[in-house]
Amino acid sequence: MDRLRIVPKPLKTELLGGEISINASDAVFSIEEKLGKEEYVLTADQNGIRISGGSEQALFYGRQTLLQMKGICPCVRITDKPAHEYRGFMLDCVRHIFSVDDIKKLIDAAASLKMNRFHWHLTDDQGFRIWLDSRPSATIEGSVRKRSEFGSLKEEGEYGGYYTKNQMREIVDYCAERFITVIPEFDIPGHCSALIHAYPDIGCTEKPVEVKTHQGIFEDILCAGKDKTFEIVHDILSEILEIFPSEYIHIGGDEAPKAKWKECPDCQRRIRQAGLKNEEELQGWFTNEIVSFLKSKGRKAIVWNESLKSGLIGGETVVQMWMDPKKDSVAFANSLGGKIIVSDFFHYYCDYPYSMTPLNKTYNYKAVIKGIKNPETVYGVEVPIWTEFINNFEHLCYMFFPRFAAVAESGWTAEENKNAEDFRKRFRSYCAILSKIGITAAPPHEWNPSPLARATGTIGFMNRNVRNKPKNK
Ligand SMILES: [Zn+2]
Image 1: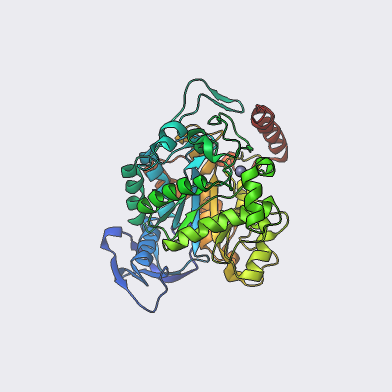
Image 2: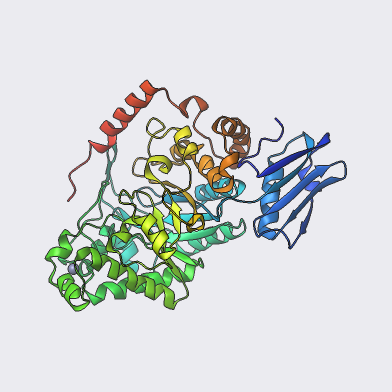
């Protein structure tokens, strides 16, 4: 089976006896309606290579498997389909921006690993990276910060950049050709310093706010009491919807401190008029306003799990669970049938070093949520990378791979077919494909550091980045 090192591991592999020389261009493809939308059967024997699938997407996945079979292979029948519907990766292009060409490399890797979602984090405190025709100030003013001071990663001088509409459409098309949906994220009402810098009158105090130069959680969030906020947010979303055809739009909702809302007369008036109990409910109300707007345009929302604190989010919204100590996501799934995307911070966040999150920890994490009654409410998995401490593509790839592939496998491969040691072997073979794409993974000896290396690596990372942080302002 050494010649059949496929990532992610297929559902079922049957050896048929004998061997065949694989030439991918000889494969014959056919649609078979009885197979599922993402299900394919690949047969390679003396009669040649046949791939049948339930859709063009399924045939594409069969082809990705075939491309990992090289030279002389045992004759084989591979019957395969994904464990989860949603299999994604997230890239933060705010803290550091990455070129369209580099993003395409990640998309190529995702496609080859049978992922089907690209969550593109485009707005945050440290920059607003979407070009807007209706609100050009958001981009012109909001895309530039005066300097960068992310822990030990300090860069003097202005840092800026954004994606033009043509560039974003290019990414959408490139993904569509690979059966990947792009889900843009416009993070509101928190993480909006860059937008409030451009439009101070949609903050609670209406005072100038800087585009942030360091990481953190900041108190200046969008004012939920002012109608102007919704005018601007609707304008921005309308343009986002023109560029991105995805059913789901990510509207953030994470890390929104309520200090300004508590003191803001407009926000307090909104709480009274809408009959809300407190600022947490105000965030729920805010989110639901945006969800209604999206619904009027035929779209739906994804939010980070903090949005559930209000208790007001409806079951049609998808929740991305990253840090949920109170298990709000479980209650949401069980009581409303709401769908959950699993992106657990301690296991899936690839911006943390291998000393904190070794490959095995990522790989062995089960994408099942304890306490969930209906397993179908687990929509799938997503591997995120935040880029405060990552300012070039080489480092991004080092941090992402192999953990990116480990999460792809958790999304595709049935839990009972997973095996960490086997995955590591298969990933080593898969590196040849990554290399052709232009991606270099972290070297194998760094994937699972020793306990001592884990301790020193973690302390070093914390000292460099977390303790070395300017006070939020
Ligand atoms: Zn306010």
